[in-house]
Length: 194
Image (cartoon, rainbow, N blue to C red):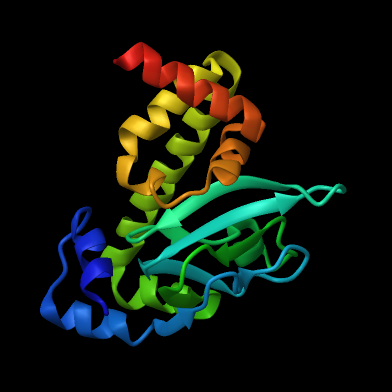
């Protein structure tokens, strides 16, 4: 249950066996059924969530009921509404499971205690948050300067296995396209890459 999270952590920092034992005490294991919410827009986000198995999505819903996907979180990814989690304010988006999933969750209080009691975890999370900020900045820049085809090619080339698990309408939402536009784009990209 903790193998995936420890592999993820040890990509950035080194842990002792004693630290691994202590880290486990701060997390709770949860099973999340497909379509079950982890975070609900407009409510407090009480956990930071690590996906051990499955796939989650973070999104907003507009006045017409359309989902606008912000992030997909497969195995080995963290997800949360960080603003709500750290500030105690309401969540700006919802997070639910696209597949039956298994997650490890940590509360704000346990997060603070973890980073104090296992100082190397403070460095781990700092590196994690830095990478997240860089990724979000690149995505924002990409949304302004890259064509729809370039954005589609980039996500498919960098996440081929994940693309098999994401329905076309949700991928279109993530890319800021209509499902019809994505369908036409996929045909054109296939033709151009043959």
